[in-house]
Image (cartoon, rainbow, N blue to C red):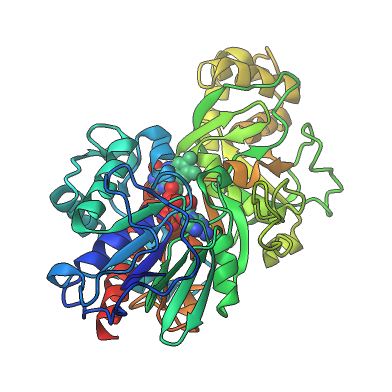
Length: 512
Ligand SMILES: Cc1cc2nc3c(=O)[nH]c(=O)nc-3n(C[C@H](O)[C@H](O)[C@H](O)COP(=O)(O)OP(=O)(O)OC[C@H]3O[C@@H](n4cnc5c(N)ncnc54)[C@H](O)[C@@H]3O)c2cc1C
């Protein structure tokens, strides 16, 4: 048995931050170490050490009799199932790692839990204070991209972010054990027993869950943490892939993969029952279909101009990723909407079927309403009065292939703009300013940057991140029912919630 004051499960962004703050909390009482050797729970297979620690852990050993964590620091053990910590940090921001947003508001985040609770958690650490921690304590120089509201490392290296966090944690004395895949957490007296897949047992009065969500299972996140949290009495808001590319048809007959542009995009629900039009027909003129805005609960993000990309299968880019959860939740048939991936193993637990938001049930087809250039209808009205052809006009404001496809679809290629009938003008302007793309699916957790749903905020104390059902269990990061849009918001949540959990986990350990 390995004894610690605090065990943290998952060495991602939230777990690393949690460990750093847990180990730094002063005044941890001496653990009542057993005399002699640790209780034998079978011989312990050797887990790896993080590359940054450099020192091999002593598997299966307890501290020498009477020894306590030196200098009043908590003995913190960080268990990570993959061979290296922070793999998602490495792949973040196109390997540049968008560490933080410059500014944030609650409207940059989606949760089905109480937004007040979310606010209270964010209040515990401002973006500026978090940024200063990175520069002053972690030694990471950050550069601001004001136009995109993002902080990146000056080096543009996600590896630097990961390595500095790991090194800092190790230098403070955090014991990082890689290859340690936690399978269960159970209570034994006043201690929690954390057991790995390969039969190693760890024990601590306090355990932090930082196991992430379900996105990109190859990075170690498969929902085991969710299942263990459920075994301790927690419920889950149904999970779903978020910030994930969508599939669907392109305008016109020639596919447009690789075409990209900045657009204004908002998700809408299309009610075609009244008009009798088939929304799955890419050529359908949906101008007269009932269009309903998506509720702010489902998508609080403000519409803003951002990147859109036609892919081989459909659509991607920040504009699409940001609202993809609306489509995912409205579609019942996403490829991975109802399974937790556990490569090579039976699924830990089956997700409840993807649920429809109440407004999606009323208006079954979710669509993307796009203004391709951001210009308003009046501006196009003025342009159409000039001496252009439709083709030359559209090609001068849109990528050529997209312009040609839109005109092929509406049958208005190479017309003299001034001679268009009012109905045709109206159609052309609608295609330019309020084009409806109707996605047919999504790429699921395999490509999702984050997971929506998870452990409800209402099931933790927002002042400490402690479970309301299992005393001594703390939760943080993506396992919780919070995610943000593209822009450093998801890491901000991981840093903030990880810090809060780490501080209070250590405090509680010191009181025991
Ligand atoms: C491609 C990509 C790019 C991204 N870019 C950005 C970006 O630039 N900016 C931004 O803000 N956000 C970005 N994100 C989102 C961000 O990476 C996540 O929000 C963040 O990593 C969540 O941190 P976490 O610590 O909660 O979870 P994770 O980082 O997923 O860490 C969880 C850890 O727990 C481990 N684990 C899970 N179960 C167990 C178990 N049973 N036993 C032991 N260990 C376990 C996992 O192996 C993993 O290491 C990106 C995500 C992806 C996929």
